[in-house]
Image (cartoon, rainbow, N blue to C red):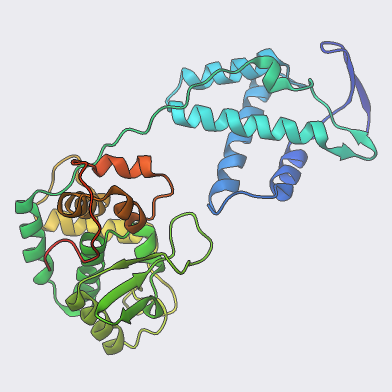
Length: 320
């Protein structure tokens, strides 16, 4: 490698192959959490910064260059949340470079470049932009899904009811398997592969109505579904592949539209919101609801809190 003298920060540097180090950074990251999209997000953030460097003829970035990049993001369509995320990725990447050794030499840019840039960004609070269904809308939804026919109609009715009566997330519906449906005495449980987790845990389940449990068992048996419950239907589909979260979201959006529910704040997640709101209205127990929804932080659950009196009871919530 050819040595280049970087006079701006008075440090002797090797010329840096940014894409090479980005790939190593992504490969050597010990944890990305359980979100499979994280590597893609990190790559997108770093590539945006590299483009900024190229456009401004920057070979080795200085703190002012990092601030300039953040300033450019602020002047575009990027949200404050995305800008904070990109800033965090840059901090991790440059920290990695500070620690990395290439052919016996440390690969340094400006030491602690992001710290020197003194990036001060306040992460925005998440704004709740979804609404629950009204009782009239719940009635219309029930009438519509009960009118659906055929295998596709049965499948779409069941996944809609699981979200409404069990509060399942779209991703949890996608991952649900027949073995996850368990009868425990007089209780009927759906064990869930929760959001952000690599495997199912013993206490990750929700109670569902007996009738819904029996409908799922009947549907799975009728169509010989031994693995995933919600699969594609048609000539090119296979029972071993489950519907993606996006596909399920599209299906529920179509069902809401078919039921004549077209309010701006209503979306597939509104079924889960409806379940949670009815749960807290009936049982007034935010900690029990936290467990039912699979929240890691009770502050997330407090969105649904309307009353503070608490008592514990386990049962399906919305009348089937």
